[in-house]
Image 1 (cartoon, one colour):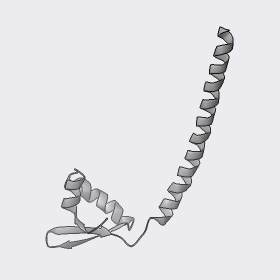
Image 2 (cartoon, rainbow, N blue to C red):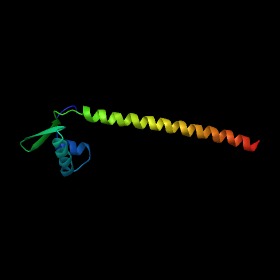
Image 3 (cartoon, rainbow, N blue to C red):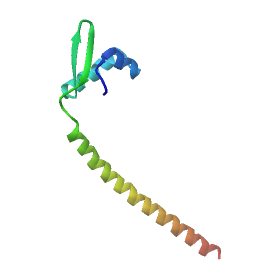
Image 4 (tube, rainbow, N blue to C red):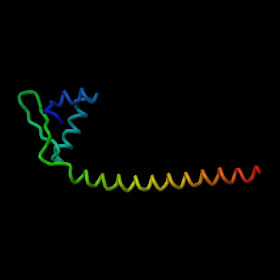
Length: 93
């Protein structure tokens, strides 16, 4: 994200084959998230004009929903643990 990078550099950084990286880059290009430019034998990638605000908002909405559900589940589990502990004491008395 900090600077342009060649497909070869990206493939090495992410331990991927050139073919695999080219496929990923192609998908990102179609989504307008990156652009590429070929200079000689080197294809360079840079961030595209489209930003991820829409996707980020969608992800954040679901993150909040799942966080609330997990918090509610934690509450239920803690209540069950307290009840189990309390009921266990009554039986042994």
